[in-house]
Image (spheres, helix red, strand yellow):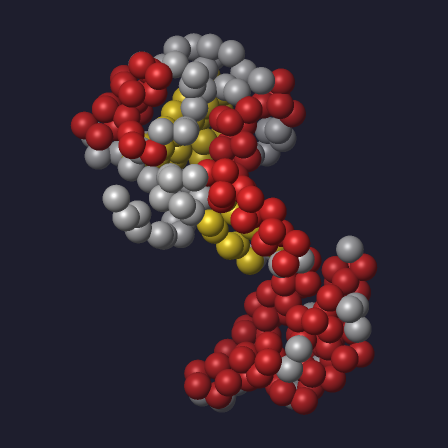
Length: 226
C-alpha cells in the first residue's frame, strides 16, 4: 500500500502514547518538540521519563490502558511489548476515527514514522513504506553526513531575510529569484567554511542587505562557531 507523505502541525494537539519504554520515550521527545500535549499511560516507566522538564506539556499515568482512554485524542501511539494490547488499541482507534501508530507493525497502523534527518528547520524524512526500517536508518546515517549544521544556519538567515523582504515593494517573483541566487552562489558552502565576510558579500550583492541587517552579528557568529 502506498502511503501519503505529509507534515502535520501538532501545536497543542492532544496525543496519547501507550507504553513506558525507550520507544515510547523517543516518541514523547519528538512530540514535545512539536509542541503537542502528550499523555503517556503505562504500568511502568523508564527512568528517562522523569528527567524531562515539567515545563513541557505532558502527563504520566501509571496503570494499564483502558478503551475509554483514547477518547478525544488526535493521535495514539502504541509502543507496548504486548501484541494483544497493541492490536486492541489499533481496533479501538479505528472505531473512533483516531489516527493510530503501532510500533514495528505497519499493517496495523494508520501511519508510519519515517527516519528523520534534522538540522534546525531542515527536516529530511526517509520512508520505505514499512518494507525496511533498516534501510531507512542506513540512509539516515548517510544523510546526516551530507547535511550539516550549515543548513540550519542558512535557514535561520533565510527566515529573517524573508521577513525583511516581505515588507518591501519587491514582487514574490523577484524575491523567489533572489532566494535561488543565494543558493546558487554558494552561500551554504561559505557558511560551512565559516567565512562570514563572503556570506555578507553574497547577501549584499544579491539582496542589498548586510548580514547585520538580516541577523545580529553576535548570533550568526555563535552559530558558525558551533
